[in-house]
Amino acid sequence: MTQIHGIIAYPVTPFDADGRGVDTGALASLVDRLIDTGAHAIAPLGSTGESAYLTEAEFDTVVDTTVGVVNGRVPVIVGASDLTTANTIRRARHAQRAGADAVMILPISYWKLSDREIAVHYASVAAAVDLPIMVYNNPATSGIDMSPELLVEMFTDVDNIRMVKESTGDLSRMQRIKELSGGELPFYNGSNPLVLDALLEGASGWCTAAPNLRPRACLDLYHAVRAGETDSAQRIFDDLAPLLRFIVAGGLPTTVKAGLNLLGRHAGDPRPPLLPLDAAGRAELQALLTDA
Image (cartoon, rainbow, N blue to C red):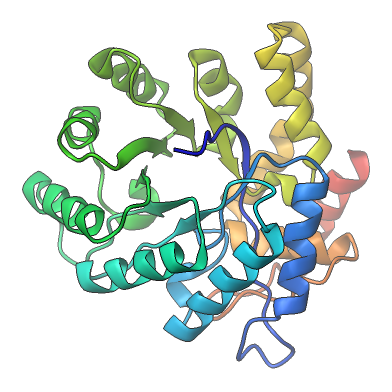
């Protein structure tokens, strides 16, 4: 498996002027910049990429564009989640054909899923593709919370489940994953405000949209932790923390697109029912970016 570590950057999905399709030129530019500023991997079509609001044709366009622009420079982890197992498989297969290095899957369901249903969902996707799977636990968006016990059980039972993105913001979940797997299951932090504690706990990487706005600070934080420079890491985190809290509280597609637009990098607006950041929010975000 391609080694995946460090800053895993999540690009937004820019739409064209009328909002009816993907602006592939803007997407390519944003992905290029994330790589040029040091991202260790690119993860399109997560929550930041508005995957839940795309048509299947748009989903495929984002995958094809991103993999093509990256061109093997860093790993690409495609968010392949969908409401049904069948379409999650369709998306994962498209990611594999396009040349992605891994897929990230969040269980999404109108009905609350049992552990057995979750396990069969993942096993079915895993059987349909050869790619490594990052299991994504984010109950705040999916309404489904997977216990460390279930995550480690699936890692043990399903060959190509290789890693976990933990986004609950509960450090004890990561500690429990490490304990139950004997340190064999790599875990990645998906909760921006928790990043320093997670990296110090041994997270293999930070899955984040923040490099769209503050790439250097994100890299410096990761490298400071890796170098054992805890005081320096704390100072960097304290500087970043207000922005991290803001983008999470305001919704990642809304706030990150607004920040990119403020920085003069075309990202457009989020797709309804999401709305652009309001005037007060833009002013607050501008101040955060200016202070940085």
